[in-house]
Amino acid sequence: METRKVLSSLCYFSIFFAGFIFPLIVYIATGDAVTKRHAKKSLLSHLIPLIPTPLLIFALYYDLTKTPDSVPAFTIICIVVLILIWIVVIIWNIIKGVKVLVAE
Image (cartoon, rainbow, N blue to C red; front, side, top):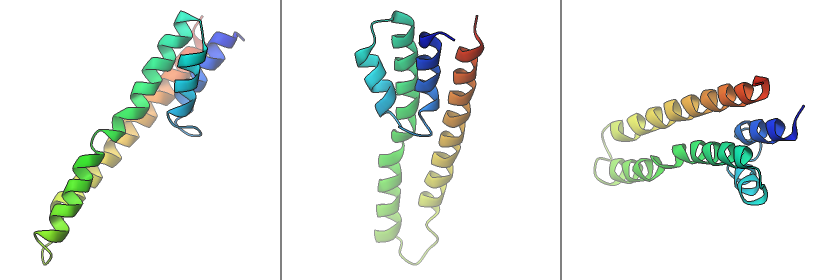
């Protein structure tokens, strides 16, 4: 098996063990254009769930300070959306990692 394929697929699978650190290291350290492209794609996909996190923090703050007696609906919606985003990103990374491994 080629080192290029293994490194590229590990960049996608690192969502389970190293987060965005492994793809970042591979992106910086490798000289191979294909591996660098896969590292960049996986790094961006690992960072996607961080985008709605400020919204979740704002929702939690808003629901706890502005409406203490009601159901924190805004927070619950944000948590559900964040969970769905995580599920999609994990599935996408698994699919991409397997595709890289089985590619000819």
